[in-house]
Image (cartoon, rainbow over all chains, first blue to last red):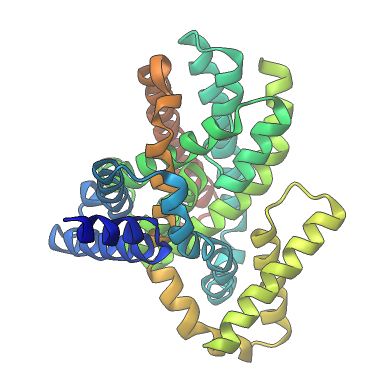
Length: 238
Length: 117
């Protein structure tokens, strides 16, 4: 019994265990998603996160220990963002043709994402700190955290809200767009990129490559606009 | 593949340097993306050399959000009493933002007479 305990104390503290656990959980979730015909409810981010979080809770492992292994995956978010240049370049001509719809939709969508969050949080009586933390929720995490800090929000809360927003967008986009009978993959992708950043973009790539490309563009453009927009809107609204 | 990774990381690094030295409100990787696009425009042959690696990374983009997502679960207690109200704001505001974005996109597209798809 003590041998097992010694072995476990090595394993649970080793980055290797948690790196492997993350990959295995994702593979299982990706299988599940495929078996469910890429149903939005079988979202692989959602289910891998639940599986890993349950494992951490059951084994009493702290997030810090987990992240020592998982950071190698987390690190790839940067190069992955840079890699979006490939589908963007492939579609450059098409994107130039849709420059006007893109710009108009970006300004409208980004504005609504920020203003509706502020207005509703206010109507529900949430505190100023929470309102400020929620305002950049549709932007990619590093930008949202920076914006939240700059306007006086709680960066840790913003990080949580950004990821939740991404999952909400990724799970709802397909049924919503089908219900609205939107068949233009460019419009569908762009909307989920603006409203639900990278997690929405990952979902879009799963469904259609054109949608994924436009989602990546929506995410990148919204990162720019939100960082300019939130400080202005917050000064006016809070 | 190593050359492709070096190019991606090199662009990200250059992006971080530009953003930090000019104090721009943009994340480093987004600046790196813009830089790589400029490189592609100058040397289109680079795209094909990068494609196998970028394809693998983008096809598995979901995986990269798992560590941060697990962090959310570790910090769920931060939501406590305001949890239901905050969740309501997130759901409504996200759906609204998607509807307005898609509506504007299609509206302007149709105005331009490009309603072919």
